[in-house]
Image 1: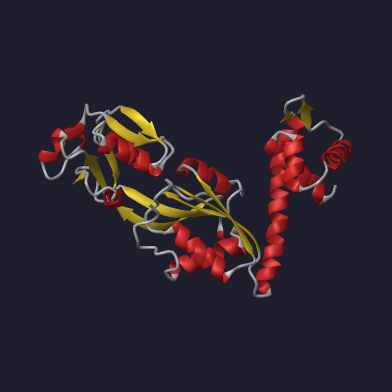
Image 2: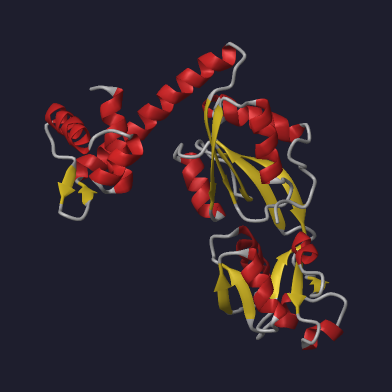
Amino acid sequence: MELRHLQHFVAVAEDQHFTRAAERLMVSQSGLSASIRVLERELRAPLFVRTTRRVTLTEAGRALLAEARRILAQVRAAHEAVAAVQGVVRGTLAVGTEQCIAGVHVAGLLAAFRRRHPDVEIRLRQSGSGALAEEVAAGRLDLAFAYRTRADSDQLRSVPLAGEPMYMLCHPDHRLAGGPAALSPADVAGEVFVDFHPDWGPRRATDAAFAAADVRRTVALEVNDVHSLLDLVDENLGIAVVPRHFRHKRTALTALPLKGAGEVVYETVALLPPPEATSPAARALMALLETGGGERHGLGDG
């Protein structure tokens, strides 16, 4: 079994298509098909169910995929470790992040990293905190900037970045804008809410605050980006509960602190594998963040 056979197999499994996988790998489709057939003969099991439109994994293929990814990750880590001993950080840095994460300016951090380590290929994925945690634990991301996890595990550890209270945003003409200087979850029960997909950190923090106050709420307008949320609130279509730093993104909106939800309810962290499994590139990025390369104590990405 050769590493290129495993690389070819993983590419086909991820793309679910031989032609697309061949284009991504820059190999001929016939060569890719031959490589998969060699692997299937060696393992004595079909790995894919082939149709005219796509391919899907067989049970044997699903079993192989996790191991193939693990093997390829270990090989990549070995190359990177040797390069690090020689004083050079090489390879790939796969980073995940939520939108507008507090405590780090991701774009600035990656730009500083590229200037310092030009031989590293940077890959970035934006998603919700739950999905990012799974990607780091599975080894598909080197690290991620996300909403806090409940606890560390054998596959995942967290490094605190920032913590801040939640604020309620509303249109200046909304009835709540002229009310108390601070609001509790009970004060806004029954309002129309704008919020993110349930996997995003601010939504998780808001859900936790309302659950702790035993107040039910219904999210009528659900979005997946910050600017859409702010636009909907700006049109007085609903209110939103967001981390404090969001109020600086649309200063015309009324921002009131959410009381009774704890002093700090929105906490962000860097999610990483255990120290022994953390790549040299990820360690270099965290070292840069610790020295101020990513404005750790700033407002985060907009």
